[in-house]
Image (cartoon, rainbow, N blue to C red; front, top):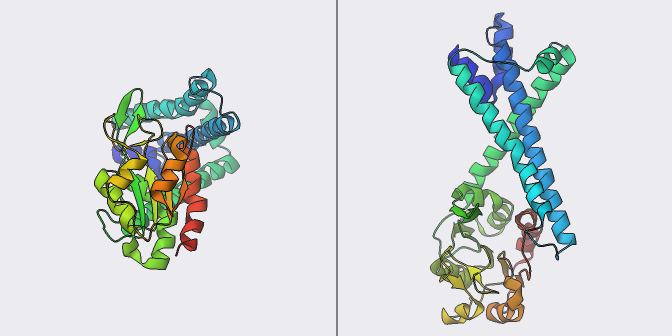
Length: 310
């Protein structure tokens, strides 16, 4: 029974509900209700996060002059993360109570759940969330199957600086996250040049040199450098990469046609980058760039670029 209680909070409340209904048991009814509520709150917290982050992007892209220190960004960041933080607290509390065979419920949801229409809506919503989760999992597995690491002969490269700055500290991100983001481009590249044509690997001088010499398209997912106009290879201020660094390593390969530099303010050295990476087309930013616009490019513009490459 403890296992069933716990599974309710891990997204399997609909299955537990259907199973116990068929068996004529209601021993976990309150846990089922709480599990459904928890899943729905998770979806709402994700939607709130996306909504607030979209507002941040819109405000910034319409008003470049607004500094990141402006209170509006701090407020929106708080509003985007607060629901997720509260959800985590509720999840931990309910899981711990489930282990001891106890729980508490919200009266309004318990009352609403007695209504057949609302109950069907809640169950259907969570089943829909399960299907979305399985779809994302499938795409992630496919993306990791397509992408390879440490390849010298790939056609498209995603090189990532695995450094996420939160609260002044540096945090890493799993590699599969980057493979998932590169999936739309990887699928198009695989259709054109085969499954062995896609590389996703950490950013370094060596990997960047290999990509620029062998790739057709190179996406550099890095922060802006400590030196204005450069890109950072690591959190170490000494590991900046500048346009002249390209020439020092011997220039670019004959196949290179497109380079995307995600680093903030790399575009302040626009002419220098254009000259160093010629004849490739280069996308860069002379301002703070946003994760949301990089994701948008990877999803929509990137695949089109791949299909236009020679």
